[in-house]
Amino acid sequence: MAKQARTYGGVSADQRRATRREQLLEAAFEVLAPAGPGGLTIRAVAKQAGLSTRFVYESFTDLDELVVSAFELAFRQMAAAVDAAVAAAGPDRRAQVTALVEALADFFLSAPAKGKLLSTKAYGHPAVAARRLARSEDVSRTYGALLHGLLPDRPADDPAIDLTARFLVGGFGETSTAWIQQSLPYPRDEFVHDNVELFLAAIAALERL
Image 1 (cartoon, one colour):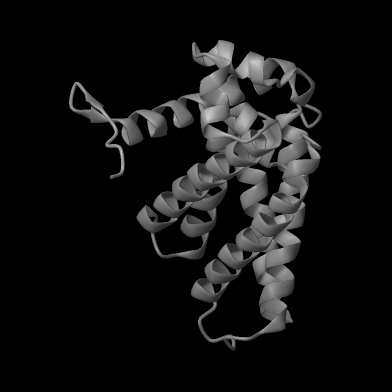
Image 2: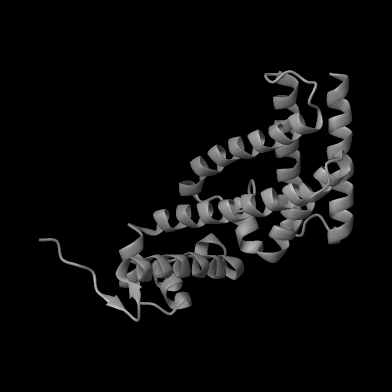
């Protein structure tokens, strides 16, 4: 007979493990923020979370799995923020693009370590490289869907939409990385405004393709 997990205070063992996992992932971001990837260790994450290192190994095989899981969590949170902002925005082109750019900029500002982990060249952890490439494809599809929504008369398989989506992902990814690293000194509102104008200019160019 399978051994039943104990419940304490109405919280099951599985729920406690899930809570600790989330706690450890958020602790990893806290360690990344000041120390970068070089300071990220199992012991440092456990200490930041206020947990024993055995709880880290309960949730993650090794440090690489922890970093990849942190990357995936940050990506899901960013995607949810963007989806919610775009869904709540007005249907016109400027409103949709502004909602997208604002959501991304504000996510990076509110959680710099998460933004750095997600951005193109900020943290070169090898375990994240493949995930970053895969998620870049996801973002390209999201941008493509936005472009299709703004230009509904374009064919569903229009290669120019895919081209423009990838152009925007690459361009905004690079500028966001530079902005997060403070090598591109832009106040938030100016950063949003200028990137919105660049997005709109790319969409206008797409209409001519």
